Amino acid sequence: MPLICKRVFRQIFCLKTLFLFRGVFEQLLAEIEKRCLSSGGWASGNSRRAGIETTCYALMALHNRPSLVRDHAVDLLLRTQNPDGSWPAFEGDDPEGCWTTALTSIALRSIGAPSGPIEKSIRWLLNNQGREGHWFWKWKFRTVDRAVQFNPDKYGWPWFPGTVSWVIPTALSVIALKQSAPCCRTEPIVNRIQLGTEMLRDRACPQGGWNAGNGIVFGSALAPHIDTTAIALLALTEGNDTTVVQGLNWLRQACVDCSSPYSLAWSAIACAVHRDEALNHCIAGLGKRLSSTDAISNIETLSLAAIALKAAEGNANPFEEVI
Amino acid sequence: MNRRDWLTAAAVASGSALSMMRLQQHKYSRDLRPKRSRVAVLHTDQYSDKLDEVVYDGLRLFNLNVRGKSILLKPNIVEYIPGKPVNTDTQLIGAAVEAFLRLDAASVTVGEGPGHHRDTDLLLYETGLSDQLAHRKIGFVDLNRDDLIKTKLQANYSDLGHLWLPRTVLASDFIVSMPKVKTHHWTGVTLSMKNMFGIIPGSRYGWPKNVLHWAGIHESILDICATVRPHFVIADAVIGMEGDGPLNGTARRMNQIVLSDDPVAADVMSARAIGVMPEQITYIQEAARFLGNPRAHDIL
Image 1 (cartoon, each protein chain N blue to C red):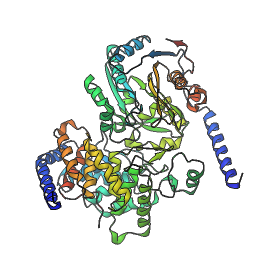
Image 2 (tube, rainbow over the protein chains, first blue to last red):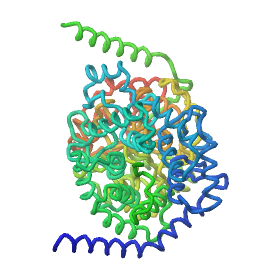
Image 3 (tube, rainbow over the protein chains, first blue to last red):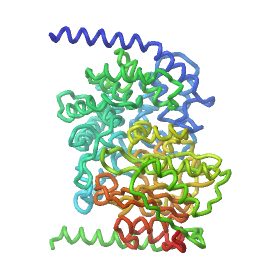
Image 4 (tube, rainbow over the protein chains, first blue to last red):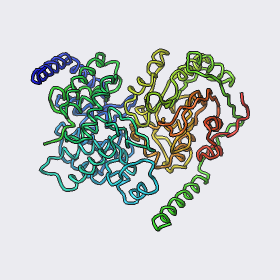
């Protein structure tokens, strides 16, 4: 089949798929709104407290939908920011910052929130680094602690301050920094984006894709995870990068048999950013599994599915870099 | 020996000495050792429906009073690697559910908070646990995303002071640790006490719960188990893992299920089954001072 026909076919398929899921999309948003807490925000799983990560995804899903629920969620995020600019894991948590800081910066930027809290969070991110960034731990990982093979010169961000870098917090932090408008990127921002990007390349699994942290532990290759790979690919947008190509190749294969709407949603969001043809497959799979939104108890999954459906239509993808 | 080697050796020696000194101080507030510890080793050579009877008969040996109690089964579900015995077998989990219901438990819930995998639903599907739970009509709680309660730790080996713990764990009347018997490259072995790492919520501490690694794995195991001591152990040693565990080791057939009302006695027995000397495992040694008895009084 000529290439042009293939492209037209894909377009028609994509439009048809999205048309079919238009109703699902509206149901998703209604369900997300319905499940908000009276105090504002959304709770994760069985929790009764508003989770910052959960609230960020729900807010991104509702995006520009005018509603009181959305406004309360923004208020929640603004009032839970720690004095140092970071965010805790949930409302009522100890005032220690963590990985939710990068995600909240992305969520607030996506809805056009005031820049003050975002700038403060960026400063916190710049001051925070994986423990291997310190000279002593670099030395330790190079000399006495060689079980986990990685290059400690390439560090990113930890889940929690005082621990080493991991793929998801690093990818989210790189995205948050990349979303600072290119005109205003200071040297520290440019340097940390570069370092974080190199860290992600260094930790990739030998077969492509990403596990939670290192690709090799005690000489054995670890298997990649779908969601982690998709999130890493959101941070690495250079299409000609070998690590990106290998990651996308692995992700395309993994999505074929994937039964989880959570992983399919992350994959669709990543494929939309990379304009990858696996997007159609992910959206079709996602739609099939979302036939009953009642069966999905997890707000993160519902929200990510809504973000994915929106991104597939070519509308605002909150994880996309500002160019 | 050059200067760099000497410095390295000195740093390692002082690190180990400091670590040993930290562990050897009394850091527990309660002596939780029972007067009598009982262990039963059940023999079975396969995972099948027959486990329902095997486990039920095994539990009856202990005369457990679980009538009207809420039971939490905490299996070890880490990662799905085809062909590798990484996780507690789902048939065994199903059999334990059935056995506790037959013993008149008010409710049985399965709960786990996988350490590296954020997509718990996918992991349950891949391991077959979701099918097993659906078949038995049993609920699952993702401990990574449960309601959390700030809890003071009942020992102070890790210096963490407190941890946010899942309400489901704290509210359960009877906690059963169901480890897969495996070697572990950081701690020597992963058994019923190390399995309790899985109650620490990822939504608060991340994936993995790296805060615990930096506070010391042995130290964190002791603090967690001092605070939430499993009431019972059902260890899956039918097929365990040796070598490069807990993920990439090789299968080791032992044809055993270890039951115990004492996690220390269970871990000592299970460690020996996989060919590891429990005396060499720091956290088991220390746990024997206040969490349980290393030697069972009764082998049932």
